[in-house]
Image (cartoon, rainbow, N blue to C red; front, side):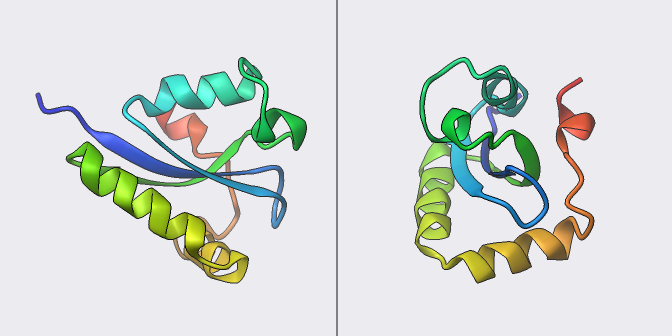
Length: 97
């Protein structure tokens, strides 16, 4: 089985503070955010809700996509989230078990 890579967006709440990241183990990484394992932006701003993610087949494409998303304006990111997750549900329920 090939390794997969994930680009994800977390939110503090509906329409709240956003954080974009990349990882090869999405359930583990989201757990780290939720349990405030590391100091930093997500802990400081209580950003723990997985509201969007994409799957990529290689690290290079995932990292490139993450960098592009980080450059996008907030309104564009909110539109992206609302297209796939209009209720801003915590998608961790789907992938973290």
